[in-house]
Length: 294
Image 1 (spheres, rainbow, N blue to C red):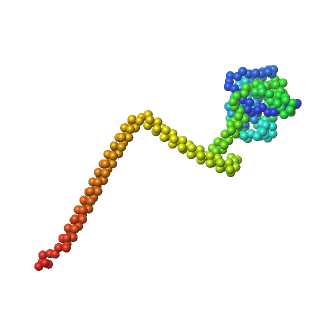
Image 2 (image 1 turned 45 degrees about the vertical axis):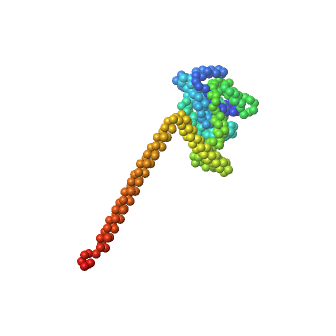
Image 3 (image 1 turned 120 degrees about the vertical axis):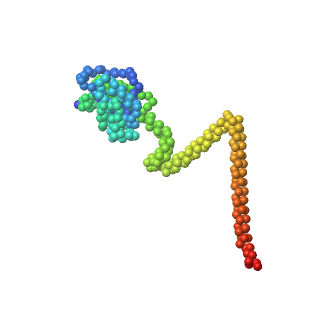
């Protein structure tokens, strides 16, 4: 069976807008399949860092027909790294992400980079769903990657979701690289885990300490500002309360001093009485009896 010309894979970041969707289909319609059998829709891609843009594209594919069975092909790491580049997630992680999407009925691992008639026949595919942006194949001739599918009337268009893509998410991470590394250092990851140098780690840890110090200073400044604002708003009340607190303190202080003075006096008086009693006892013992004197 003749194979289609090689092509670049469907970009994983092909996403769809919110439903309802205005569908576009430039290919001739196929005769409707047996009504007892669901219409089999195929969508392919890399699906790295699976996000809601991917999910919306798959939702559109699933809702192309009332009774549809959605097959999703996902390329493995070897072929993806060869033609597109390194992914963040492994092939196993990407397959598993797709399996947990509610619109997907079946995941086809190790999906081919190029869809041909043999693959379509093997999986009994009625239509291939993807956005209609032209994707040039790897031949350099500038051919549309889905030219073969469109030519045989099996292409259905989905719409992209603006504002989200795998590349966009990666760029966000790179933009705030230091912040993410710092956060993970604070969580206990080592510099080797994060792939940073010794100097870089020390620099980030110093920055962490400075950031904590700034936060502490800011916290104290806010407390002082709050006290100052409160004092300014209720100046008379603060003065009145201050007078009352001072008077109360002095009263308590005076009362405490009086109690302490009384206690000291009582203690001195008690000791004097004990001393006098001892002296009286001593004198009585030292006085001679009358018989001895005579």
